[in-house]
Image (cartoon, rainbow, N blue to C red):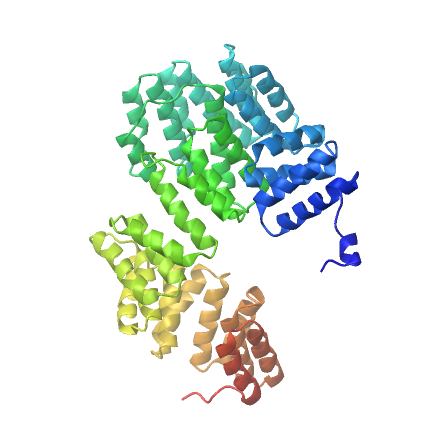
Length: 524
C-alpha cells in the first residue's frame, strides 16, 4: 500500500495534471521494478498528456533507450531541447546518417562539439566532410593536448585515407596507432571491411592476422566489404569508444552509444554485440538475449554472441540455462568454450564436474597449458575432495609460475588447511607476501601459518591488517578471533567471531556460536 507520506516522496512532473498522473506513477513504478518496456509505454502516455514537460521527458528518454523505444527517445530528446543529455545528439546523428540527411547530421555534430562528448566531434565532422565531398583531413589535424582525442583522430585519419584510396599511407597510419587486445582487433576488421569494399582483398588479408575468433572467422568469410559512408564511420568510432567503456561500471552512456552505433550502421555486428552486453549489464536480460540473437550464424561475431548469451544468463542468475548453453558450445572441444563451461561449473559449486573439463584443457594444450589452468584444475580437485590430486596440480602451477603470488598462496594455504607440515607452506606464503604485500588474502594466509606454527603474536598484526582490508570476510574474521584468543584477548576474540557470524550461512553461524560460547576447540 502506498500511503500519503510515501506518495509525497515521489517526484512528480512540474506540470502534472490529472490525466497524466497515473501514467507517470505507473511508469516510475515499472522503472523501479526493471520493467523497461512497460515503463517506456507509460512514460510515452504521460509525455503525450503533457508534451512540453521536461521532468517527464528526462525520465522517458533514459527509459526509452533501455527499452529500445527509439520513437519515444527522439520525442523525449526533442522535448528536452538543450537540456537533453549529450548522448541524445548521438542518436539524432545516427538517424540522420542512416537516412543520408547531411544537414541534420552536421547540425548534430556541431552540438556534440559543444557538449561533454566534444572529443568525438572532429572524427565525426571528418566523416561528414567525406560524405559531402569535402576535405576531411584538416579537421583531424588540429593539435590537441587530449591524448584520447589524438588517438581517435589518428584512427579516423587512417580509415579515411583508406577510404580515399590512399591505401599505403592509410595502412601505415593505422599500423602506427594499433595497440593490442580487443581495440586492435576491432580496428583491423573495420579497416579490412573498407579495403574489401574497395576491391583490395590482399591488403585486407594483411590486417587479418592472428587466431582471435572474430579475425579468423572474418578471414574465412570476408563478405563484400563496406562503403565509407557517414553511418559506417560513425558506427566504427562509437564501437571503438564503447569497447573501452564497456569494461567500466554499467551506465547509460555505453548503452546509448552502442544503440547509436547500431542505428547508424545496422550491419555492424560488433556494435550489436556490444549493445547486447550493455543491456545485460543494466539488467535488461531478455532484450540483451534478443539483440544477440539477431547476429547471424555466418557473422564473424557469431561465436562471441553465443558466448555472450551464456554470460548474460549467468549474470542474471539463470545458471541452469547458462550451463545448458555452455555445455552445448563446449562439445566441439574449443578451448575457450571449454574454459567458459568449466568456470561456470566452478561458480555453480560443481567442482567435481569442472575438474575433468579443466583436465581436458590441459591435455589439449599438449604440455603448453598455462599455470592458471593448472591452478583452476587443482582448486576444483581440492573442492571436490581429492587433495592428493589437487596437491599435484597446484604444485605444477607453482613450478610453471614460481613468482606468481596467487599460485603460491593457494598451494601454501591449502597445505596448512589439510594438516601438512607448516614449514614448507610458510616458505611459499612468505614469498607470496613479498611479491604482493598489500594482498589481504595472502596476508591472512601468512598470518594463519604463523599462528599454526605456534607464533600467535607474530600472526596478530598480519591478520588484523587483513581483517581491516576485508571486514566482511568470514574466514579472516574467524582467524582473527582465534589469534586474539591465543594471545589472551578473549573479549576481542568474541567480537571478531560475532563479526564473522553476521555474514555466515546457517551452518557456519551455528559453529561460530559454539566458539563464541566456549572458545575454540583444543588443537591436537
